[in-house]
Length: 111
Image 1 (cartoon, rainbow, N blue to C red):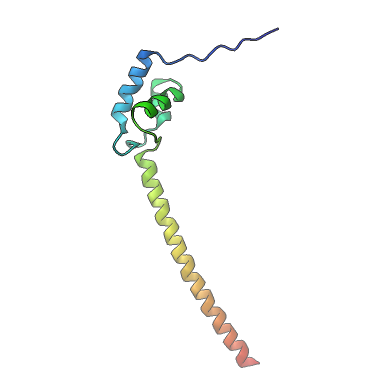
Image 2: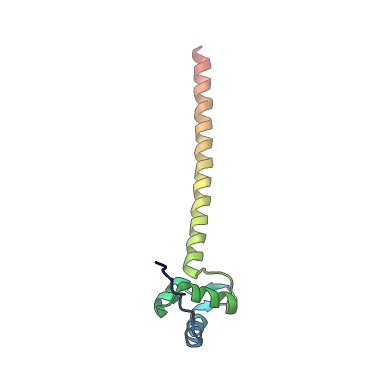
């Protein structure tokens, strides 16, 4: 018995128009990112359509990146935390080095 898979429904002109209208309101083409917390996924969920439709239209009409302001802010915050952690690690490494020097001096004095 042969089973034929149905071909997925393709976006109609009306679907693409609706996606385009939403994208125009939430995607900043100059900054190449979504406003706020929006994404291809949130637009697709809003319209109850496949994410691929949104992605394809965004790539064609608006911009290459599926990123948003919230994610960019989070990435900047993470970069700052990484820097702080590396600075603290360097400071602690310096303290450990001083402790090792003092321990070595004590050992040589006891010898």
